[in-house]
Every structure is written in C-alpha cells, then in structure tokens.
Figure (cartoon, one colour):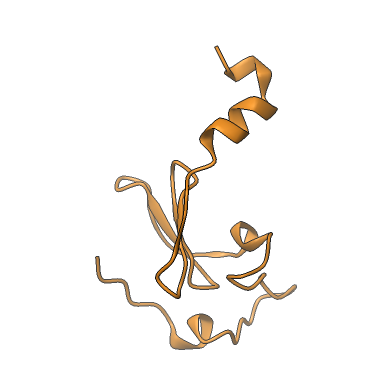
Length: 81
C-alpha cells in the first residue's frame, strides 16, 4: 500500500489546534484523519498512524498494534452478544 500525505503532517509538524497526539501517545487514535478509505477499511491519521476498522494500527516506524475488538466489546456489554 502506497500512501502519500503532506510531509509536514507526517514529520510531526501538525498544524491542527489543538495539536494532534504523536504516534507514540496513548491517545494517538484521536489525531485528525488525512486520508480515509472506508471501503478498504483504513484511514491515515495526521501523526502517520494507519488505523484499521478493526482498531488495529500500523505505526510510522513499521510496528503494529493488534486490534482491540475484544477489549472494546467487553466495555460495551450490550454489544457482546
């Protein structure tokens, strides 16, 4: 997958107010969406994180974060069935 986005955003020079959380922050998912492809199930965030619809993430350094679907379902008991 090849994604191009404004270099200023991916270099950490976020221009949003308030500034988007960095890719290593716990709240990294709260960054603004730069590119959205819901038909493919992913979005590119301002901090360089690729967020997948199953809540998995691909970080700018190439590492991945596993999907948190089970964790989220546990928090929403009405959706667990």
